[in-house]
Length: 420
Ligand SMILES: Nc1nc2c(ncn2[C@@H]2O[C@H](COP(=O)(O)OP(=O)(O)OP(=O)(O)O)[C@@H](O)[C@H]2O)c(=O)[nH]1
Ligand SMILES: [Mg+2]
Image (cartoon, rainbow, N blue to C red):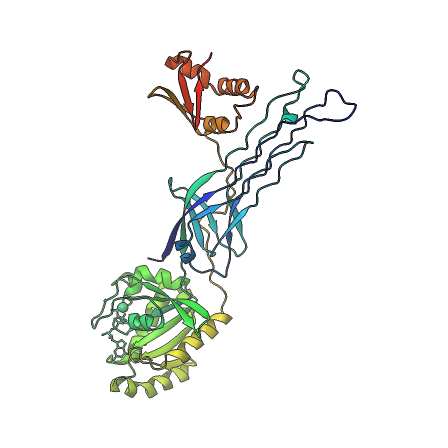
């Protein structure tokens, strides 16, 4: 109920391919290997930006990719690093892996950033494979593929202003006339069963978040009615609009009742700044109460406003005052659910082997990645790949499963003929 949600797809940049090259210089008959490494792919970052307060921009844009690293070239030139991609989100955004539900990060402060997909590393060029036994390697690597994943973003909306008051005071009506929220409104108490939130625009460009907090009655602080569970939410707001029903038998007595409940719940709630507002000024009863209420509030040194939510009278000065007060109050504190952490991307070592049409299929994050990084057209690449498969235990596992010479083995996009 207090959440804004979005689902996005991210993919970090693939690493650039490594290069096979040899030095060609005058008077150097056997130039050594000089193929440079590919550049690393760009990372994907999420960055908290306090100029945002919703996740609405992700409705239009769902896919985010970072740039691929450049290819390595001769003369040991490393490829250019791919550009990172920064995705801005409002502070208060909690990030989950959409598939596993794992909590990945909680961005709280303006400017905070978290890397959620590291770019692939650049493939090594042949210079990197030179050794005393192989001084002219015909070998390089493709860049490491970037990481892709779906993220679920959840924004905890925190109301700046809570509208409190007795049932039927017109809290939902007020919220509906100052924001796009459309809470249910009816002429009986406990119409609203859940707090509603709305974004209130003040004079076009300024805004704050307002919550309609229902269900407060006598005994709410002890668990009577619905109010108890919502007092927690009230605790997190910065300012209260205490709305009084001008058509009630005794609005002043209602005022005292609600304040008593706040005080019994916590001293902090009782101390929260309030603007007292008499509603339903279009009715004669409310008009009759206004001078009395004004006087009573003046005696207590408390600001009072008179409005009619239905006829929208007196709304603007009230919103302006609320906004003005908010500016003087400290910003709401967001308690992080978890520290924003950099999670090194684990590469899953495990693999499986299955029989399939016309051969075998090996599946596994690491083994597929190694296959993708192997340029099979290069003379030495296949032999190196075989060694890597053996080191990972894939060769042994295939033999145990009964692979025969000439069988086709599929790994990722590769199709290999088995030769022991
Ligand atoms: N005449 C008049 N009626 C109003 C005004 N504001 C609200 N009402 C009426 O008062 C009744 C209650 O309004 P709601 O907005 O549902 O009141 P609420 O405080 O949200 O009530 P609960 O959700 O039950 O706690 C409805 O019939 C509204 O039409 C007003 O300014 N003037
Ligand atoms: Mg209501």
